Amino acid sequence: MAQQAVAQHAISIRLACKAFGISETCYRYQAKLSDDNALIAEQLIELTEENSDSGFGLCFSYLRHVESCCWNHKRVYRIYCELALNLRIKPRRRLKRHAPEPLKEPIRENQVWSLDFMHDQLSDGRKFRLLNVIDDYRREGLAIEAGFSLPTIRVIRTLNQLLEWREKPLVIRCDNGPEFISHEFVRWATEHGIRIEYIQPGKPQQNAYIERYNRTIRYSWLSKHLFDTLDEVQDYATNWLWHYNHERPHQANKGKPPLMAA
Image 1 (spheres, rainbow, N blue to C red):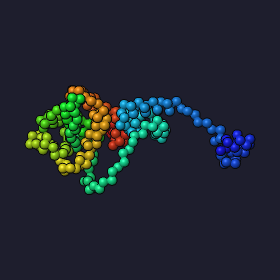
Image 2 (image 1 turned 135 degrees about the horizontal axis):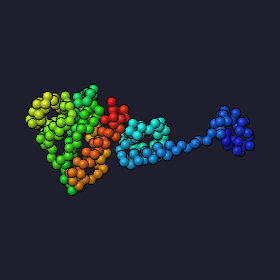
Image 3 (image 1 turned 60 degrees about the horizontal axis):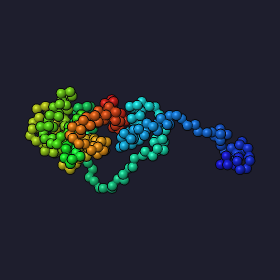
Image 4 (image 1 turned 30 degrees about the vertical axis):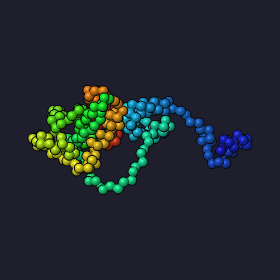
């Protein structure tokens, strides 16, 4: 308004600033573009192209904790919005649900491991399964085992391989699937002094940590790629598991990857 008054009515800048109650410094201010803005935009575009499921929180946490960038979050968010990288948020369905039992949060590693299965299919239509194992404390991924059939003996073999380099857990949390309620699995847990904690049927929220982990796997790579062989699935899962533990920020760890969290 002050600039318009000076241009149209030929009054002085000093008089215009006094009339509109602004300083002459404000009147003469011109925004200076920073080279860092272009760098931030380039980093954000690269991150969202590689991980299209990553929102602003994960992108900023990656820049702050993995790349060690010190940019202010408001500045990064402004550029993030200008690039229209915002993820669409699905509206929540208003359903009446019974209050679930509170999920106990572990206070140290190897206190609780969670197990669960996922299903998908290859390019030729053959169905395969994934056995996912995580440590609930830092949401650390421990194993992803792929197979056309994963009976109890395969589950036990995967857990035995983990126990070769990791301390055994106090509790294993899982659902009531036939692989987990079998006599072989119960006997293996008893021999190792591990307590099995079964969730109630139809209550997946009681195993929320592994369910949220499954969702991350589904949207990060399993639904994005079409694999031809089971070996391709296992190789990709192994590489992604390293990325998840070392580089992918996790909000439960204050924006740090699982193996970087204290």
